[in-house]
Image (cartoon, rainbow over all chains, first blue to last red):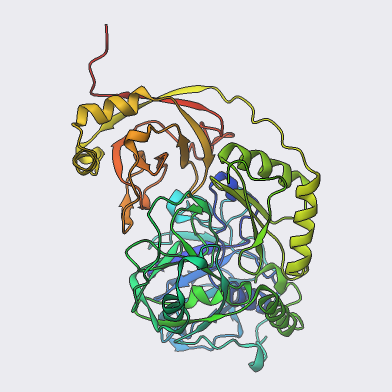
Length: 315
Length: 218
């Protein structure tokens, strides 16, 4: 069972379970930038929450399938067409041999997810088929899909068309998200004014935005740092601020260590929203204690667990 | 942190990480390998002067994780870091290979030849892996070569770039962004993708640099 790629889209990659326990070797997590949306797509076709699926960025691919297969698309609202006719997101769709699926531009947000029953095939490296573009490993030859590629599906599953995400379990993809955060290890370098600027400011994503990280503009922070800090571990969700004052918010392909001051960490409950930030998009940061953020994570997991039993693997 | 009493105090860092300050990179490596065998952590990552552990906030309350880590720290003894061989790394200094070399020479008030002499004259030791696969942090940079990071990182640094920042020398294994001033470039393969052992350099490996364009002493 395969799909022929008629158009790759802006950046379409195979993503699956994040890599865990390898950061001391410089190997990042990777996996879906918005794990919640990917879990919801996989749920509709009967897959595990982190089964390999396609992550689609800003403008999607055009694919022709050669077999009967069940698929679902979730995440940022996109124009999805089957043989030219609009079809809904958050619904499992039965495709027939020769059918052409076209995913166009996204109205808000940055990424949607295409899950295929049984999962998408990809090369497993360091324990996952997740694509890590900077080192060209995982997924399809470690790169994004392009015209002429063929994607294999692992095995036919038992999914049927007609499954729908319950309306109240379809997360809004906010155009201006407010991300809940805890202080980072170097938050003490900010004085009161700069701290207010960080948490009260209206930030905007610059054009430098990818799966490693997003440069933020709109404010400049005066950070009392000499540029000689010793490198320390960083993670997806860390906000690092070089002396230029324009911070970087790290995403799922985040480097494993960094030497710029770490001012905050996006809490685990909202880390998946970083994957929906697009160049030019706005965002705010909300301050939380670790204990508050832990409770809010559990609330979110509990809310989705009755629909996606293994949601803990994806958030 | 040098000379600080053991056990060091761990501190929360975000809602699913804890950070332990340590004296140096060797102690960070030793502490990280020990904590990795203790189980229960999703990631145990050494830095140059700290170790960060990540835990599963969905099932462990942050104060419980902190207490567990603190009690582990009180009981453990650190293993010695094993010897990991010696490697000579050839470097082409300056020009397109090291676009920041000329600026650094002006800043330090020395000619290119002197910067190269100091860099090739030192013996380095791999302090840790980090950043991206294959990137190596080397300690042993002479005091006379210490410069700050770039105020704003470059969007593209070539794989094989040799950089210095603070008291460290860094080797970039992949094309990608980077914030360290670049002095040269090496053909040495830092990340052997697909090999059973993809990392030729290990924490503890001794490293010396050789100037590719230099005159070989007779």
